[in-house]
Length: 146
Image (cartoon, rainbow, N blue to C red; front, top):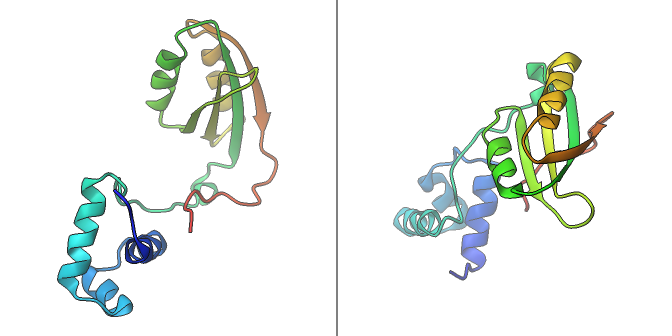
């Protein structure tokens, strides 16, 4: 599906405020509500819009510790990535090029939770090695492209 400028405007507005009603969006873009609803439905059907969520400030919830962990695997990388994707504290799983097979981003409330997690990673079948980077400061964390 090819998206046009109107679809881009709809997506940009929904990324800014996913709670915006179709009516509000129609008024803002100078279009009919039916047209907006139709386009949103098409974007959902094409899986361009995968869902709607709330952006949470994790640090205000006590998740002060962010780590980026490199994982080197012997084999079955996809199985490892699938297992990691199901863990709540894992925010991102990336299959990458280079010496490292996978990079994950994790968040924890306490250092001992991170320690336990890293030890459990090392004991996973086919995980050869891990390198953990602890984030000192977050300058930007927003995966919404505008």
